[in-house]
Every structure is written in structure tokens, then in C-alpha cells.
Length: 341
Image 1 (cartoon, helix red, strand yellow):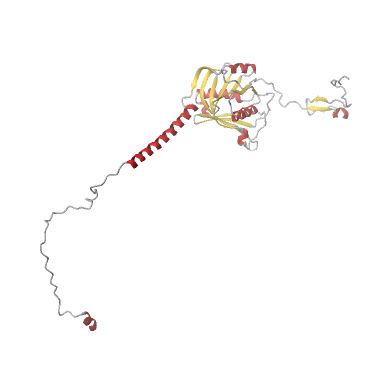
Image 2 (spheres, one colour):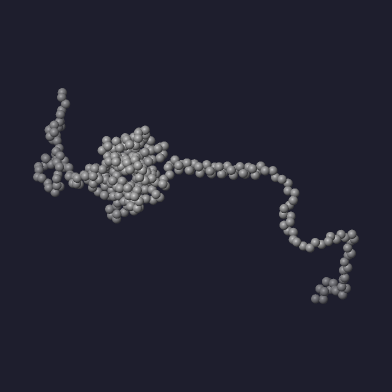
């Protein structure tokens, strides 16, 4: 028995008529049809945006092996926020960074966000314009993902964001370069097939403490207030290169301290405190071990001495004569005085 083959527009095994798909050009025009055809048709509305997709920006977001769960969730949040992004498998640690350019070429991407993990605790982010550059390397700090924050803000998935930059981005040349790099990477191209023609959230890039702080806010329609959505992270600039993932150095941050050096300074400070405590204990032991000598002279004996003339020492060999007490015979006794009163 041969298997039943269903032909396009043919009858189904259950003698049910196949539903026709009808594309409506204008919702206002309704063609006149009988009831049976209306029940067998599915109306597909016309696309909202009729423009042409011209800006072909595509961002490849992936990482190296050795990342933790927080970095993985951050990458997933960025892919959700950026409908023009693509994903790829993790890159091996032994591969050179120049291989990323070939991966971007295979994936047909001209921007790249590459997360590089070291020692399973330090996270570096590369943002590059492939294959010709420029590129920048950052140290990612204070990562908080969407699932961790649980903010009250919300936005439509695939909607196009506004990009807000700190005024300090226009004061320095390297900040102006990063501003253009962020604009081309994080902004969703207009009329992108996976994007929605709405603007309901804003990305903010602020500069404070010589670092770049990233925030994502929802724009409330009623009063245009901002409610944070997430994720949030801080970028500490290390270097800016002329090429993609290498090349001549255009800018190097003089205030940057590597995580290894920072941990070394913390260990040295802790070791200095321990050594100080040990020295104090040794001094206390030495004081307790010293033998106490007998004090022959009282150092406080001369405290109350006052200067005076020296008098000759008189030695009496005979007893002194008793004093003669003269009594007043005319003085009445106490009884007599009391009786006179």
C-alpha cells in the first residue's frame, strides 16, 4: 500500500478542504466572497514597515572557553537586546585573536563583541570593526544580568533603542572614537527583518571614575520617565588598536591597573598588617622577659623638699625645766559663776 501524498490544493485524507492563505494589501478593502471561501482562508496582515533594509550591520557575539555562568547570561541578554546579532560556538583558548576576523567573515558580520575569560575570574571584552578595525579592549566589572536584577522595567523584544552618551565623550579623541564604535555596534538598523518599528527603551553610556557605565532604561509613554530594565555592567578601557584585534596602539589608559596587580597589592597590604602584629607580639614578649632589678634609691624622695637655711644641730644633754603655771586666785569657779546667773 503506497503512502498517501497530499498535493497542494488537493483533498486531505479526512475529506477536509485545505485552507488557503490570503495576503491582504489594504485592510480597508474587503473583496466580496462567499461564506465557504471565507472559512477556508487565513488572513495574513501586511508588514508594519514598508521601508527597505539598507544598513546591513551584523554583530557577532561569542566568547572563549572558560567563562562562568554570569558571563553566559550576559551574552544571552545582549543577544536578546540586539536583534541584528548572531551567535557562534566558543573559541578555543589556544587560537589567536586574529582567528576572530575569519569567524566574522564566515558569519557575514562586520562588528564583533568577543568576551575573553582568564583565570576563570577576569573577563575582558573586545569590541571591533572587522576586518579593518579599529578595536578596543575593556575589562568588564560589576556585571548584573536581567535574571539577577529583576527590575520593574520592560520593553518590546526587537524594538529599536535610543543611544544616550555622556557629554564627556565629545571632550577627548579616544572617547569620540568609542562613541562611534558603540553607535555602530549597539544601534539596531532601521527596517531590520527581526526588529520592531518602535522606540521604547534607551541605552546610556556614562563616564564616571574613568570608566564607562552601561545602563538600559524603559521609556514610559505617559510622562517619559525612565525605569531600568537591565543588564548593567562597567567597562574599564585598556587599549585602543588601529586594526581588528591587534595592530598599532592608538590609545593606552595610563590609569588602568591589571587585576593581577590589584590582587597582588591586596595580598601585600594584608601581609604587612600580619607582620606588624607579629612585631608587636615580639616586643611584648621581650618586655615580659626582662629581669626586674632592685631599686636602691627612691627617685621620688626629693619631690617635697623645699630650700631653707641650714640650722645647727643642737643636742640637749639635760631635760628641759617644767613650765610654771600661774593660777588666778580671784577667778571664781564655774559653779559659782553659774550660781550668780
